[in-house]
Length: 155
Image (tube, rainbow, N blue to C red; front, side, top):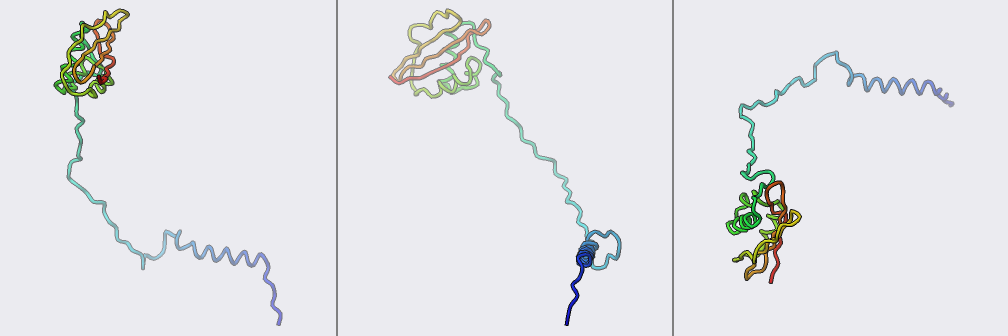
């Protein structure tokens, strides 16, 4: 018994017909709805108001304002540090200076001698005490002095 070999065209036509037969029902928009799930679900609704989160605001200015006298500025920062008052500190000192002075060991310090002369619009003040030394670096900004840096060192 001999079988005839089907032509390549016949095989291709058969494969295409089979593919169309499989895909046609999935693409069809017409026809019977029998057997189809026609249940629809409405999106849930809510009457609750959206929740908002308040962003805390600070009374501190965006940039330190400072004071006209360099020793007053240094003392105000020191007093704010002693009182653990970062808001007041921010009125006379840059954020990095505030972070640094808050690293100083607790204790009593006092202004050593006096702040430097302020020549070239920079100055420095030292507060000394049993726990060590707090160095406060100042800059002249406009008419006022501002604390640009603070450092603590142990004795």
